[in-house]
Length: 269
View: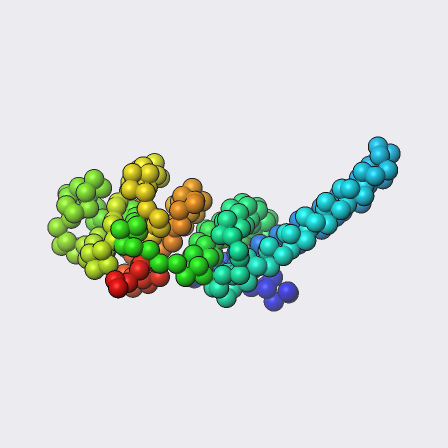
């Protein structure tokens, strides 16, 4: 445990020396946050239990029984979710359990992380990787027509005059940016692709096209909000590369995007 704490605290310097963030950060923060939550609730119980006796003799017993059942469900559910995240095998009977875990635990981890000096960006990156783990653990494949590749407009070279946000097929595939490479990849697998200028347009595209699974390329902030907003549609996240800073002439690792698509696309029979 002390080693884990040291690893987490060492990430304070990640802004000056950024390194890829794995899923371990979110898993550890979630685990520690749950332990602190149970400790806090237990301490609160011992504080208020004498006053509950004054109201009704049976009330403390009823609430204590409910608290024990809640802790039991919380512990078992958290263990199954964490095992799924670690081993990438589906230990969870219902997919919504994983979703509720990451949806509830993300803001908790952000608050806890801020208290010990971990940047939100690092937690967000780890959150996305844990989410991708849950999706891959399902081992579920989809027809190409049910998959949507969602790209940010900042992948397009700023000097390009071609308008591709309305129709990506307008791209001339000059290969000055990664849009052409992504379009060739999507043609190879027969999956649909759209380009969004922001969250509002992305939500409209999803509503119009009704995909069953999304592979989204974006920065951590857009991926986190997209994953949480798109539920129950499964969303795999692929981080864009920002050598010129955010939102300008960004890139995407084509091999990483290919692996993400292959993990959810059904091969032709």
